Image (tube, rainbow, N blue to C red; front, side, top):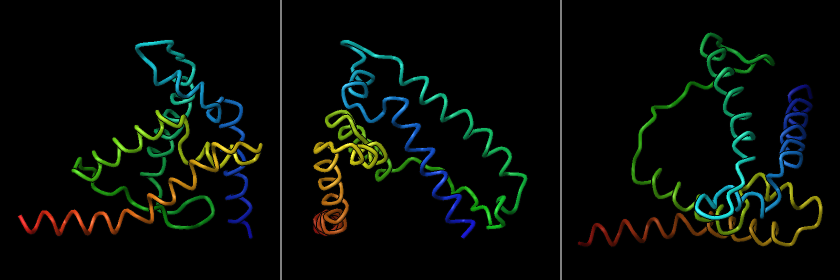
Length: 145
């Protein structure tokens, strides 16, 4: 029960942060990405506000074996840049730039009735379900050549 409460609290805090920061406003996000046009730098503060506490949290977590609630802290996996990471990053960035949403803000936007967030989430889920079949097809084509 304690873990569920803190999960709810963390999710609520994240959602509130998305709303307060403007991350659910697609025009604000697209303005952040439009570096050669009408650039809106305000989301840089949002990103900095997320990166800095997370960097501190990772440094603290390195010295601990369990989290505050007693669960084991997972170790960071080997960090490597490969084809899957690059392609996934490109697709994520393209979707973020075109729609002005990423998964978190899209979920948050459902709370105030935005149909754009619902369409984005449906498209994202379709992509997630189609990916294994597409990946298998690509690997078969690559093996055949």
